[in-house]
Length: 486
Image (cartoon, rainbow, N blue to C red; front, side, top):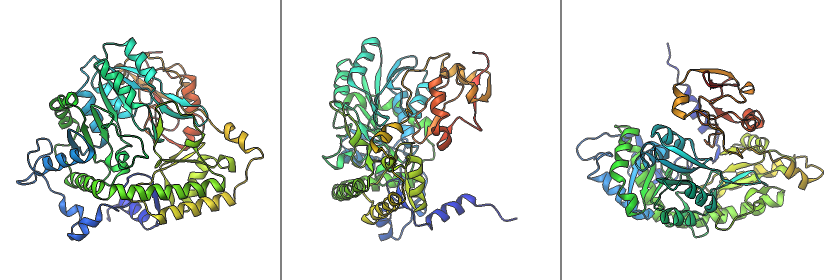
């Protein structure tokens, strides 16, 4: 009987479709990784080693891994850096668990990534949720405001740390400078989830890096916007106070990461750091020029870029390489636009009913933007614009964000261990969640175990979001709730 190789067949099929990547990872099918290896007639699989004499040990580095990490720290402006083979998720887990004692408080945005909430649950940490600012025109989260963080610190002076997402999935960068200053004034550690910002240091036209702004700890998904392999990330120590936590953070990292770390992943991090330093600035300048030309072409066709529609509070900015584009004035919804691009072999990162998120990188090429522009032109030509474009832009904007903090009916740990039942989500109003409810991408929970299921959450999930997105936790329209708590 012939063995099934469905995954291999699917990935091979995709590679032969000549698709253009406007999604992560940032190496874009190996660009930026393969050049050096090709010169040495090597492949990543030929370098798949383990801990033998000379290869060092990620969890107790003394040789080549330590040297590679030290070089990365120098390049990215950290005091010290640790390579991660469990993605930014592992770095977030290690940073939070090693910083916030069990039972202590962590101030964090309500739209933090699942990994942050997982750390809170694993560490028995008390979350102090802060609602992010929401741009009402675009329905996009702007992130934390310094005023709301200040209010949270006033109400919880015993908090141990503040976690900030910077930038967010749509490329919005909050006023991190002010948040760090006020947090440090009150003696709090600042942890920055900089998963989508490993490239920011390559241009003055981009938001400043978390490290340059004084973050104690910053975790970057080097694979998302630079050129390392998926699941490879870096944890940077930005201050002496942050570095003082390294022994405890390292202990947690050894628990949440494999004891047999991937050498191809670590090697890709070293190569990505070298690429960043030697070629990155020039490639970023070229990318920004490509984006500028693409922007002008797309606007002339009738497309809108969401960042242009938004109102920016003082101190906020956005990542110009994160393309958040809408065809609503052409009568094209976000999901429709994503699918139309996909039919032309142009694959974006994700869509909402209003817009599509496209993620180029420093190794994206002019031909990629040519394909994207041609596809958008064809789509625009066949579109049926509404009679009142300005009105349609506002009409189509659904609120896909939770606007009020959910009511907690049980702790997350209680919810996970309590007796559960799966019921239709449409019948779950007022019940207590026994699982995470997470649209993916972007991986930001609408519900955390122990929270009451509100009418707002039901509306969001049972709208187009639940139809078009993969919503983790939801299976055949059913969701896990607690039996004992009603």
